[in-house]
Amino acid sequence: MEILYLLIPVSLLLVGLIVWIFLWAVRSGQFDDMEGPAHQIIMDDDDPVIGQQGEACDDTGENPVKPEPPPGSPTSQQNQ
Image (cartoon, rainbow, N blue to C red; front, side):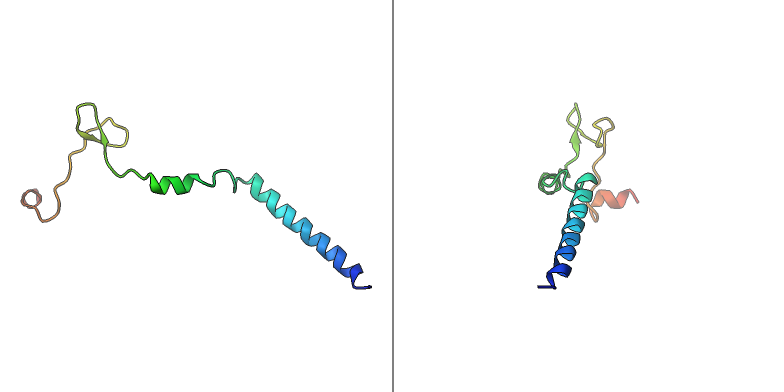
């Protein structure tokens, strides 16, 4: 029975510590967006943006980007 005098305060301290850690995590934004990163991986778009004239553009959609020929092709060897 005397062990309860030790176990009850220790358990209350442990519960208090767990609540404090949980509140810190909530306030620091740990639980803000749980699904966003998972959707970003699935919806990753590596294709270049298509400009108004139908040419590939940079990420802003403004500056046209010339596609680079694959390595080893005759046109890539002429540029060197």
